[in-house]
Each structure stands twice: as C-alpha cells, then as structure tokens.
Length: 178
Image (cartoon, rainbow, N blue to C red):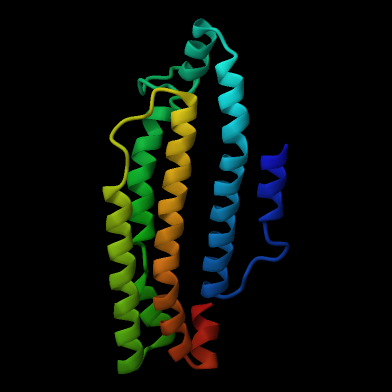
C-alpha cells in the first residue's frame, strides 16, 4: 500500500507540455518507482525469511527465474525489454525535430550534442542489461532497483543537453517542438 501511494503521488495532474517538463516528469516517476521498490524490499525479505524452502521455491517460481514461467512469460520477456528500452532511449527523433523547428547552425550543434549524449546513454543502458533473470524474488527486486537507478542516471545525463538545445529555440520553435 505504501509503495502504491508513492507511485500514485508521482503521477502529474496535468501532462507536462514541454520536452524538458516531460523528461522531468519521467525522472520523478522513475525516482518514485525506485522508492516504491525500496519500500517493498524489507517486507519482502522478512516475508521470504519466514517461508519454508518449498514455499520460497514457489515464490521464486512466480517470476520465472529460469526464464520459462508458463503462467506469464514475464521473466523471459523482461530481458528483451531491457534491450528494447535502451533502443527506445536512443530514439531522439533528430530528423523530426529538425523538420519541426528548422534549426540554425547553433541549434544544429546543440541538437547534435543532444543526439550524441542520448546515444551514449542508450549504449550504457544496453550494456548494463542483465544476461539472466535472478533466481529469487528478492534478487529480481534488487535488479529492478538497480535498473531504475541506471535509467535515472541516463535521464539526468541527457537533461542538460536537452535544456541546452531547448534554450536556443525561439518561442515559435519551442511551440513546434513541444
């Protein structure tokens, strides 16, 4: 319940209108997800420690630690999603942005910098994807926490380049970019 309240509190009442605002909202949501996981970690560990070995085995099987959870297939797909997220993070639509704002030379330089930083961070995220699903529920939760931390780091690395580019735009260009 506490974790759910943390997540619900992180949702904006009104969607942000600017790219920087949307990135900030994403950062806030990721931080809330990380906080929610940290809120659940202790109780999960306590709960797990009170289970028999058979019950722990059943709990661990819920996440498909062998990657073959027949009931949901979640674990096998999670590894693929990790790589996909790295690809999506690299999705700076430079051509679309350039078409929308018609950047001058200074703005093109800032857009290129944004594209480079985004690619670097996407590569880091792809490189940090786990190669296997952790065997226990606690280890999977810890892996999610680590992945969220890595994503927050990437968002924070991209933000200055986005702000730098956005700040070079005229009001009219900002309206098209928004």
